[in-house]
Length: 467
Image 1 (tube, rainbow, N blue to C red):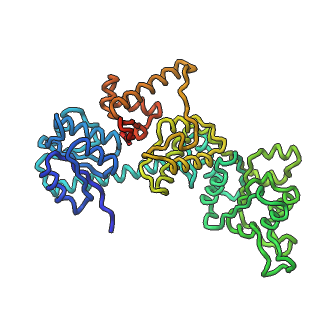
Image 2: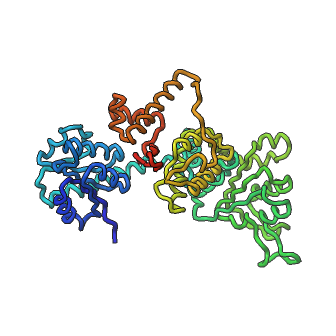
């Protein structure tokens, strides 16, 4: 049975709540709240598809401004939230108190006919689904077959992968250990016409010469003859698909010559060259070191280099992808939180600073490992720098430039106001004598995300005020 969309009903009158819930329960999974604070809590934790607010029933003094303030907070938390107001004033209700952003909320006059209300709810639900689908489609350029990157450097990598995947050209991937060369190779394969064929990997740095030759080209059983009992190598396994040769710079010179013959003649046999087969496959190779230098040092054959480096793609190290560190960390946090049954985990402020400051010598692999450890070690719903085994970053005493000083002061004041007012955006903005919109713009510019705004209460409990 299909899951019902979630509807949050908000009214200060218990009779209104029960009557509306009973009337709409067949079409929606109904949640209820009778005051502003409980409505905000339910909205944060459930993110309903629709919210229906009766602004004529008191949610707190003064009743209308509380209702409209609640609607503004919901829209701030989720720009795509679909909220409908019920009021005896109908459309004119949006002009009372704090204005609701135009087009983001719809009003309906009371008493509402249930048939008309259902139609309005279904229409708003459909609009919301279309908007979220459009937003997801726009976000897709930041991901590519298991890879993620909003930074300019990674966007260039994505463009190169899409172009080369449409061909059968050999590809050489450069990148530091842990930067994602294997993931990039998988992405090229899955984008190519060979995506339904095998993807076979061989690591040249993991085996000695004899074992590597057998693994790559196949071998005969001890004392056996070529034939049905022969054991094929990775080249045979990859026919019709993609062969990914990692750490190609570790391939011994004699085997480099064998590989040149294979790529030039388009056929491969066993270790003694019997029973050759057509090599209908694509080769992707990767290296942590520059093969041009290896060619100059006579450690790598130039003919093999030119056969492999038809297209060269360089995967940037994580330290040069500033935009991506926190986004990747959040992605790993969600993944491992679900795996280990720890929902609604957030990074503390010191963890965020530590993630931003760390040099990431192990690149994405190190980040994934540290976040995984952090999820396991976290307590109280918060992942701290110590959980990640990263040193807490101290705020420098003296900024280097006037711009840095101004940014540091803005950040400090924003965080102080949020702590002072328990994460209440309206109160914090009012105390600083700026509008809510300006306050949010400053938060966005400084990289302060609402769901990371944490406040320690006197009892030591950590509250998540703006998820």
